[in-house]
Length: 261
Image (tube, helix red, strand yellow):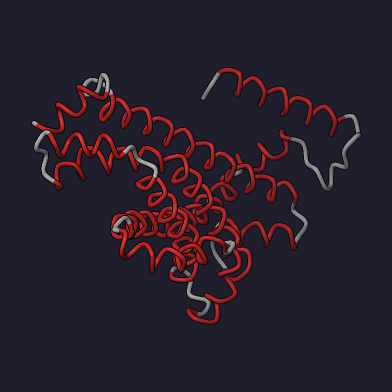
């Protein structure tokens, strides 16, 4: 995490604490950060949050990974022009529907199953955007690189492996990062609405009993997880760029020469 980000967070927490202690914010509704920290250091509270965090993590991660896998696979298939013309309009409709809108439908289709329901919601949150983003990334590639690689004798499978997939994945990676975060948010929403376990369900419990320190603690945990996801994807993006576009690619000419080998 950047130093300025940490500094801004510290300033925010200090101001928040000062405003509560000064009575500018109602303590019952907006607990001080120190009270939230005290809540989290309580062993029973920490254990309860960790157990529900594990539920949310398993659901969100499973749904996201399935959405990513099927999205990239279907994206490759829809890169074929004949299939794209027929199936892409349908994919666009799924992309346009807000992920939370699927939750009531999934409740009817799946029921209140503690694992299948949020995983399906997370999947439908991730799959359409990843598919749509990957197809658009392939569509906007530079055709000259592919053409020159074919002239140099590169086989279609080699072109797909060393030019199409790496470049399309790099273009789609920011969207994938966003969907990784959205998968957690969608899972959290599904847990709030329909499930007895998970961070979302725990947040609703604290809201019902007006335990605002616990409610803020749950939201803080979700925020930290989101920040960790973003940091992990930033590191992953740098490593992928270094591997695919670093030492081996020092210009288009060298890249095409590498592809043709």
